[in-house]
Image 1 (cartoon, rainbow, N blue to C red):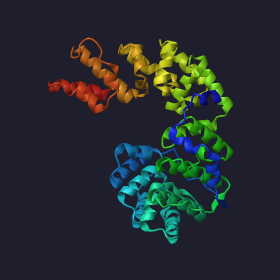
Image 2 (cartoon, rainbow, N blue to C red):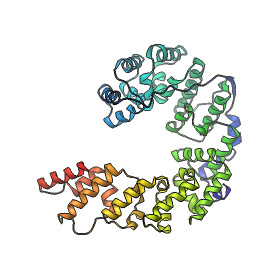
Image 3 (cartoon, rainbow, N blue to C red):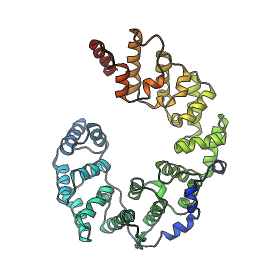
Image 4 (cartoon, rainbow, N blue to C red):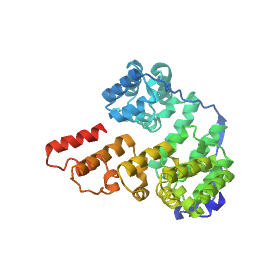
Length: 419
């Protein structure tokens, strides 16, 4: 681990956080205790009928885009509107706007299958009984809807107070740290650690999900402090998502394990500096086993890549190390063998390997083949980056819709859509 850290560069603006033990000690005025509970999840085994109804309901009732509704339907599913309708009516009765409700459902769709009368209603009433104004209630629940998945008034109260203080912190320059009596045990560590991350400048969009989740980075005490020091020393920006990714990796893996992974990459031709550079771009780079790493390089070499080309590809697109052998083979064979782009084109633009085969690679490739067969773009393939590294609209404008022959445009669109 330390051979990796030596190549890290501290950010100048993070120097003030060098004494992290002080931060941890300062942020832990904890005394009371309470237990946490897991949020009930819907079964992943849902019927097509339920999925279809869920999508239609979300689109019609909340105006959500169909793709978003489809994504939500994979997490929750229902076959009638009774329960979700009662949930939406309850939220509206407490002053939540349609925009806030859409945000809540997007972030925490499990709420739609909760019991509005026996579970959600009493929780909202309890928060109001503690003096929460309508605007405070809607803002806090919209920011962290998962708070309504917690059990017990004491639990909800602690989360609510912490979130409220955090929001006020950003709105008032006169804010002073509140000395709540936070619960002991796992929650003691959790809230203390989240407080430290807040002090480092982590934004709400990253901070609040950690607060109500069971994610590894915010648990523990000594391990958290040790891991946080290392990530800060590596130069990761605490306002970025990569900071959390790095913290997860460092906290889950021992120094010995990380050292072994670094050594594995070194045996493949990477020096420690290269490993560090890739890790900074994609922290999950170090989560793959040595077996997976060796298997991936064997796949690339078997497809005609040299070791140097593989090394360059991974440096430019570290996610490539995690692709399955089947995915790499299918995409490479289509692009290199069927389309005749050279391997070096993939090495220069490796992100193309991460695109959807069905939605992007094959449809666009087939359009280019049709244009070449008709002699409309010459005998040579266009730049692979011009074909794939652009939005669908740009691609269609560039290679399909620009033609004056309407019949040709119709034919090309049919090829694009049928692929």
